[in-house]
Length: 213
Image 1 (spheres, rainbow, N blue to C red):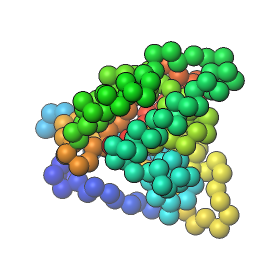
Image 2: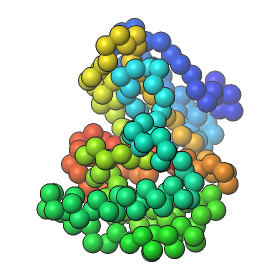
Image 3: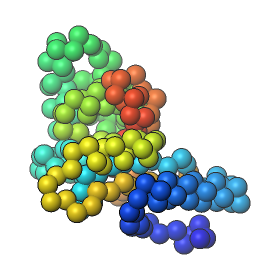
Image 4: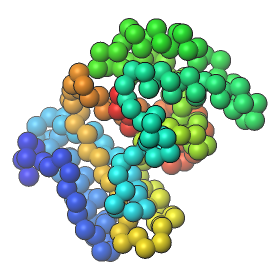
C-alpha cells in the first residue's frame, strides 16, 4: 500500500489469536518497509485496548465530566486549577511531593506565552507537570490524557479485562503516527512520551499518553 494511500482508520475483524498475531506482524512489516524505502516515515506503533468496540476514543475527563472536556484555553487553565487543588491531599496520602509544579499564575503565564496552536510546549518544557498528571491518571483522577501502550498484548489484556455484559466485540486500536507530522493552528494531537518518573504502573504497562490541545 503506498504511503500516501494509507487510510486514516481501517477496521479489521479478527476471530482468533493467530489472526491477531498476523495483523501485528503485518503492521510492523508495513512500517519497516515504508521507513526503509522512503526514509523515516512512522514511529513505533502504540496500542490501546477497549472493552467495547462501540466506545469512542474518549479520555476519562471527557467521560466523567463532559463540561470539562473542551481543549480551549479556559478549560485547560480550569482543569489545572482543580488538579493543583488536589495536590496537598495527594501528597498527604501518598507520602510523595511535587515541589516543582508551577502555581496557577505561573502556569497561566506559560499558557499566554505559548497558546498559538502549540500549547503542549507548556508541558514539554515542564515534565514534572506531566509526571503529576500521569500519577493522577493511574489513580482514577479524571484526566485529559488518553493512555496507550507499546505492547499489543497489554492492550489486548485491557480489552478483555472487564468486558461489559452484552458486548458484541472488543477492540484493540493501533496508532501508527507519522514521524514528521505537523500540527495545525486549530488542532494539536501529540504523544506525551514515556520516560517519566511517576507511578510504577506507568512502566509496568509500557505506557504512553496522547493529548489534544
